[in-house]
Image (cartoon, rainbow over all chains, first blue to last red; front, side, top):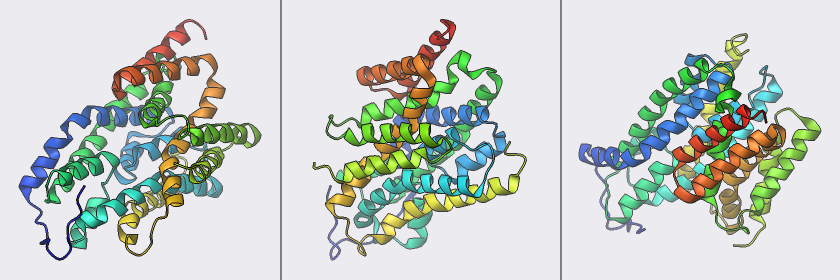
Amino acid sequence: MTIPDPQTSTPPRWTLEGFRLGALASLPVLPGLAAFSMAFGILAARKGFTLGEALLMTGTVYAGLTQMVVVESWPAQITVSAGIGIVAVTLLVNLRYALIGTTLRPLLYTSPSYKIYPTLFMLGEPNWLLYLRYHANGGRDPGYLLGTCVTFYVVWVLATIPGYLMGALAGDPNRFGLDMVMPAFFVAMLVSMWKGPRKSLSWVVGGVASVVAYLLFGGYWYVIVGSVAGCLVGAFSDD
Amino acid sequence: MIESNPKSFLLLLAAMTCAVYLTRAGGYWLMGRVTIGPRIRRMLDALPGAVIAATIAPILVQGGLRAAAAMLAAGAVMYIWRKDFAAVAAGVAAAAAAFALGL
């Protein structure tokens, strides 16, 4: 990855051609994205959301992992405490986006804010990775980033609909294993994130702390207890 | 259950949307004003995995053999083929099979 020299680089142009390239580069990831969004739809239907509520969440929060975590443990009644817990989980789960954002700054800082900040609303890891690769290969058109972000957004929101219908029609979800869609996906993500046993100590601690908190207190906060315990272990373990 | 109070649902959704956007735009905005040391970087690196583990561990404890079968199948398929879609399908199939077997 090369970082452009502030003195010599000219402000990049956002072109339709760049947008098109970004959209095309997104294609291989779209089946996985659609499956994830469908899994969210299934989960939302199971948890008693209406289709409108599911779509509203998918289009505004637009963060798959957060939506899954939060809806999986959605409270029967939205109390102030549960609401604070949910927003705290949302912040925690998405703190990694802040890190992604910091790495994009040197690549995009010459672009005007009114173009960057709306684009960032739709930013996710795959878009970020695609843009880093494009930039490493010499690409300088931020339209590429917008292209992948918009493509992902449209597919993400639309794919929730068939998932919701499947979840709503399936009856007893346990019979078809639909209640395991989300845990299965999470396990798959952990496998792809695996970087050896030392790096995964934080997962073990996070999981154990979460179970202990769940058994002791029930309720909602076990996700936070486990997450905080896990990332503290991560912070204090050496590379 | 949510329908009973649509206002708090919308309010919560708005708060969540703000929270996510804060993280999406905040890092970009902060860059240059704050430096991220190795400790915070490691913490942020560990975060997604810790959150996932904290979410699924109680499901594993609560769901018993059926959940264990589903997660094991998903993990094995992901390990071998590296395809999310296949892993989720395997997990769901294993859970359905376990249900049929009465687990």
